[in-house]
Structure formats: C-alpha cells, structure tokens
Amino acid sequence: MGVMSFLPLNELPALFPYVVDWISCLEKEAQESGRALTPIEFNLAQTVGVAHPEEVRILSVRRIPLPAHQRVKQLARRVGLLNADTAGLTLRV
Image (cartoon, rainbow, N blue to C red; front, side, top):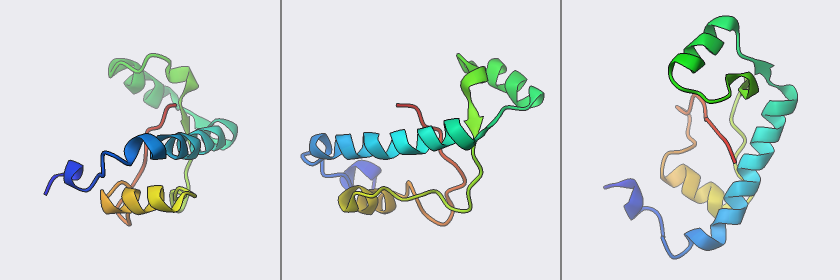
C-alpha cells in the first residue's frame, strides 16, 4: 500500500500550518544549536548541488522531536516519517 493511501488528502490543507510550525521549530533549533559542515561535508554538499552549504547546520539528537499537533504526529508515524529507524531529516521552510 502506498503512502498516499494513508494520507487523507482532504485533511492536508488544514494540517499544513501545523506541519510548517513543527518544521520551523526544528529548523530554528538546528540553526541556533547545530554545527556547520566540516570542509569535507561542505565540498560534498557543493558537489551534489546544495545552493548554500554555508547555511546548512547539523544537529545531533537522540530522537527527532515529534510534532506537537496530535493528528500530524499520528500521520507522521503512520507514513513512516518518524519511527525507530529514522536517522535524520532534511528540512527547509
């Protein structure tokens, strides 16, 4: 069964602001507390086409914080966005 079969498309417009809030909070934390890329990571980012590798921040956490909004949290888990195997996220609002 595909991911889209799990997503109630009629709900997405109403949930979108909560998803943006969650991503914005994660991005802010990474910008404030994350580290810059190492020279090797920076070169790799340039090689693969990252437009502004100097803005990239790496924030190591034990676990990626779940969205505060209950329905968004439920859908994130249901589609497999956040589970025990999630090793990282790339975010940009």
